[in-house]
Image (tube, one colour):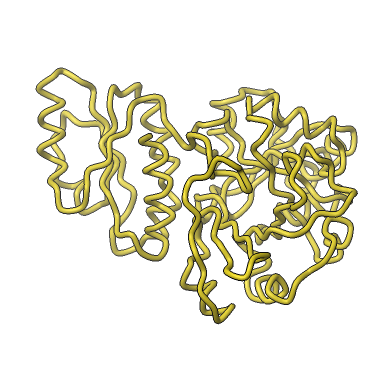
Length: 324
């Protein structure tokens, strides 16, 4: 029998306090949480996900009162980011305190922290009485989970899941390092470069893929479905490619906007991301589409491309990495 939400949160908090892992909803994607101060519990996250040890985790808080134990100081720039974007889908790099285990930060002297806007996440963290280190709930390199069924598909009943609605945003948080004179976005997300520039009143750069990992999502192949994903550049006709692969007797998946979905032949397995007029819908549905094609066992996925601006930058970042 399904526990009600209050009982789920209570049960999850007990698991966390005993050094276990739980999955829980946030507005971005579902997180796989452990007590951020418990190195042995954190090690279970890396083992379950088969996650590289040099890929740091984001620590999630439920109140600003949790920050002093996690960080050495809060710069004026970081305070502006906190005031304007927390709670919300922005993760911020801080100088870490000695209380944060090295396994959380991959040995770096900085820690990435987020204050999620999802009330269930906030209630769970508060009930645990400790911040939660929490990457997305998926085997390393695979598409993130945006609803409880995705988690069950990956891990069956290995993890207790606090069940919420499908993730509202559907893409991982923006990660910003504003400790340098020119702030740099380490991972694109729903909080855009333009929004951050407006708040800070200064230039903001976007990091390229780097060897030294300062944030999740920077170095390793991410978000990849089982089948090869091929991006169709803007301006090219996806129907031509679909027909080409169908003639080769391949089982073709098409990840497309509503405008194209309604024009596709019956021979293609298609997923409707939503209208190109609303990138929020496309963002929210992106990983659900990749999970769908895994369930359909397609041979190849052809994906429409989107404009490299605003939220489209984060959408294209995920698609380009999934296609690597």
